[in-house]
Length: 450
Image (cartoon, rainbow, N blue to C red; front, top):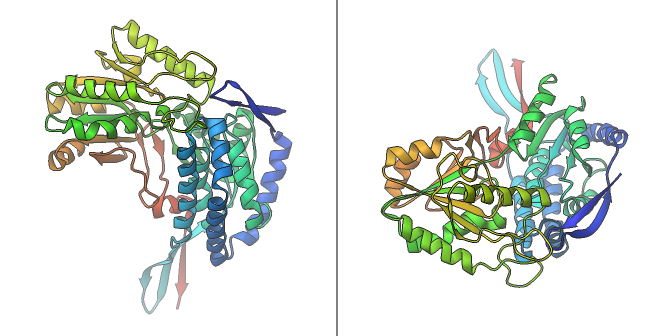
């Protein structure tokens, strides 16, 4: 079976790739299990391999970035930053320690805590950041001593396949394998008895399905799932200073980021001014083919997501929301939708209550702090959130938000050494930093009699 890859800027095919069969997947996993035996033994070699991978990615940034733009849609400079960021993750991870902790040492016994790799790790990556999120999984899994079988999204397999081809010569055979395929291969990967750890980034519904599939085998899971991040704008916030930051926090990658701002709560005294400022910025945004110079926002990545955003905006309109900016698709080929700002919605409107994952942002007014904290927390998601105002007061309000990451006067500042973890239905486990590395190993206690 082949997968047709669509360029979202044109709606036409840009390539086809062969999907692996279940039988081919079994053979890949078996070879990865054999490769694990030697790969796990030499930490120094693994560090050197990760550094070589980072160098290789930087040397091929333009090729990889162009593939990302062609299949995912983001502007080429942002695709280049994605690839360079992925290289940075490899480089950072290569320097992390895997310590042996001595927890007891006396005349009778010495007790140590070791970290041991699982074996074969199954990784499943999404279509919004195909190279970056692959790096988040490959680098720590390999440093910990695992081998990796990675399935990219069928919407965006090209850059990931190319990445795998670039890195393979730098690694022992079968240590890293990219397996293109549809949902059936994802299910087979998660259910495979030889895979002891699954790392998945994607929708909450898919994460829940993986949890059900793997429950009988008690596989270890890292699930980085959806979000409905709230940004709270306080009465003392400087609207002129935060408008540009809020624009990019909500609309970068055309809103297709799990940790993007999905809803803005602004104090009633600041509401009209913020709406006016954001609407002007949205109207000025340059939307187009990511390969064209000067483009700020590309298309939605695929037709289902495009149709979802259209439906959410139409529902908002039907519920009496005021479309202050945008609100319609852009004529012509491709999955282009005008960056959209909506006011006047109730909190139970779909655009507020659900994760839109697209360029449509509701702005909601609030009167007091207790009210806005309750409304921001009234969601099944808990990935991240932000508060905008004087830092001290913003931090005090932020302490009450139920989310894995809190930002003050910023949003989506992602660092390789900062853990990313969701609460509620936004995920299980941790990515990035030493905490993310630890998630790719399990504890072994060693007791030694003197």
